[in-house]
Amino acid sequence: MGTSDRLSVATRKGLFLLERGARGWEIERCAFLGDPVSLVLDDPRDGTLYAALALGHFGVKLHRSDDRGRTWTELPAPAFPPEPGGASDAPSVQQIWALEPAGPDRPGALWAGTIPAALFRSGDRGASWTLVRGLSDRPERKDWGGGGYDQPGLHSIAVDPRDPRRLLCAISTGGVWGTADDGETWALRATGMYAEYMPPERREDPNAQDVHRLVQAPTAPERLYAQHHNGVFRSADGGERWTEITAIRPSKFGFALAVHPRDPRTAWFVPAVKDERRVPVDGKLVVARTRDGGDTFEVLRDGLPQDHAYDLVYRHGLAVDAGGDRLAMGSTTGGLWISEDGGDRWVQHPARLPPIYQVAFGQVALG
Image (cartoon, rainbow, N blue to C red; front, side, top):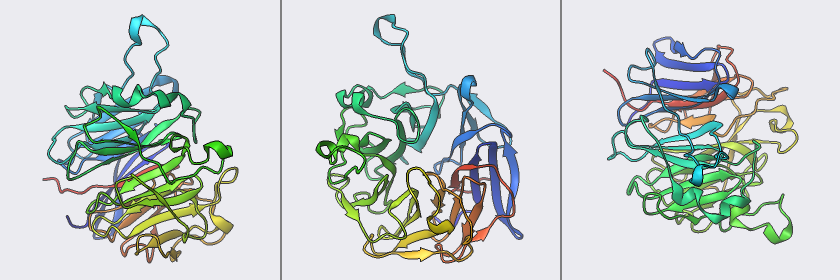
């Protein structure tokens, strides 16, 4: 695939759709203005747009567009089924926190991750959803805890491009879980991670790991990167074993992560100060890039604010397009930066946007 000329930006007050033309990146339209759009999927299989809204006491909404956001169709949002025996204590979905295509050879099939942490599947472009019981019924679920939210959330879904029955999911806080049989059975995949915030006896408990973001290398799916609450980790065997990346600077804390679409040794992170502050180190917004799988890092700052910058980049706020050179990054203060050269230099978009939850490139051209 080549370079993408369209970008979706999900914010606290709407979904902004940008296209790149002769005058650079311009906002073509805004959908759901004033509403918090928690997530967007620009499906690379057919160009369909999906937008998830988190409307508080009005509930979670899901919409689909087949014409690049000009018109939208409301879909049923993923929902927990009634408890057995008619019990009334079934949880309610508070947010859709992950939305991914279920494989290139499965048209219309989708995976969705939610808060509270659960995985749902759809086979009909979001027209209906089914809870993946194999994960939700795991006994370890009772020990999952909230990370940035009061309840645990499933925020990262990595589908193996070689075999769509194999996928990994990351939960904050509940570790990494993997399945090889399309969600029927699951196993923990966080061995080698550690949690500084846990008592010593649970420090290396795979079920206690707070993974902020999990991303798979598209051309080498066995290679994985994870931004954890207290470190950056990598795996070379599909998550069976993780090792810490200690070379990252200026800090090991952060949320966002992107991996090059063709070079599995190139990845980008956005370091910050953790816990009670959650701001860039020394008030300087930077991106850390590795080109050797995490052995060494460059700190990229050209075009990024270096004086009194307090922009935090959420876990879905950094994206790389299919070409591998174009990146986009959005922050909690509404800053949007785009790089055309792998992060060497960044240009800030002039729009003053609401706080940004996610940026996502479109990967196919519509007629």
